[in-house]
Structures are given as C-alpha cells and as structure tokens.
Length: 81
Image 1: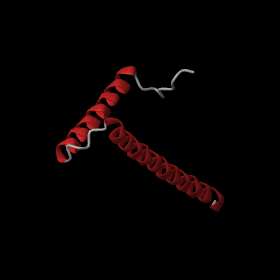
Image 2 (image 1 turned 30 degrees about the horizontal axis):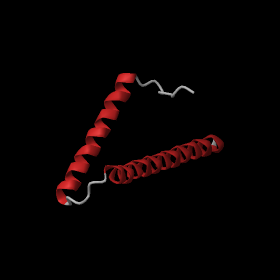
Image 3 (image 1 turned 90 degrees about the horizontal axis):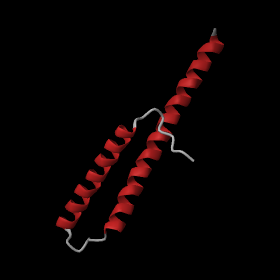
Image 4 (image 1 turned 120 degrees about the horizontal axis):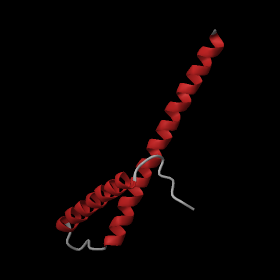
C-alpha cells in the first residue's frame, strides 16, 4: 500500500525527517552529557517518539474541536436566517 503524501514532495518529507533526526540526536547528546549512564539510545528514542505522537494527537484533537465549533457555528447561523 503506497504511503499518502497529501501533496508533499519527497524532498519536503526527507527534509522534515532529517530535522527530526537532528532534533532527537541533539536531545540524546544533551541527556548523555547530563547523565553519562543514560546510554540506551532505544529507550530514549521511544520516550521521545511517544512525546511527539502525544503532541500530534493533542494537536489533531484541538483542530477537530476547532473545526466542529466552526461547523456548529455555521449551522446555527444558517438556521437563524
């Protein structure tokens, strides 16, 4: 099954992927400098990825709520006429 890109180019997706990887490795470097015993890249990545997914879910829920509010408001205006 092909991945849907929603109009984004391969270059845009690759650039964003690179930004995220750089962000993660900066975080990992900061963590290992602060705590040299924290060296399990996989565990740190899992925590970082879960936080990113949680933020995405919250953003989507907020967007959904905003869209629903807008749709309800538009429907109310239609029925008041």
